[in-house]
Length: 254
Image (cartoon, rainbow, N blue to C red; front, side, top):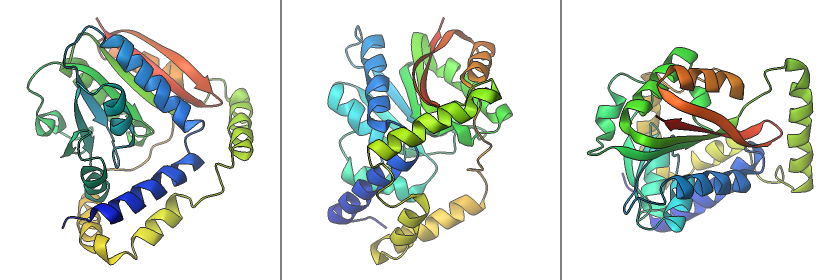
């Protein structure tokens, strides 16, 4: 059920391009997340990092480049994307298949020491609010005191009247950078489904997704995420970067 290095390279590179449709100023957001993790783990000899909803390892690879001594565990529920990451970014992380927010998901991840930093990008918005709150509580339990959660995602303004402004800023940036010139999410999956080398992984993916999980519930404001984080046992939470409705939230365990 493995995939060749050539095929993995092709599909991961195409994944990177199509994601530009959805993550406003995506590379800068990755850089900000990595800057935060580097700063918050500067005193750790071998920091343990948890990448939630890792997909094919995009963020894990960037973290590994910046923090070569870090141990990274990359978690996702999608067996196809995980296999692409294992093959193309083999040295970046240990890839684990688990459904974030499901009962016992942290046991499947199998950390053997407190986590220094948990990161995510454009993934946790798939969780409904009760699951998101449970996930934040689970992460607070996994992190060491002073450990950090860094979440990059779309956070629409709490004031709905401003939502059209932030959405417009994102569209204008995409136009200036030609971010919409490549294939989108649907066309990437449609094209990948035609690759015979990925056929077994698509079969496995269909079985996994048919058993539940991965239902998008929308996006909460940064203020609402902050409220949930503080209720979950984090001592501090704040948005540290924003462009349009794309942002990075940081929460620190007390």
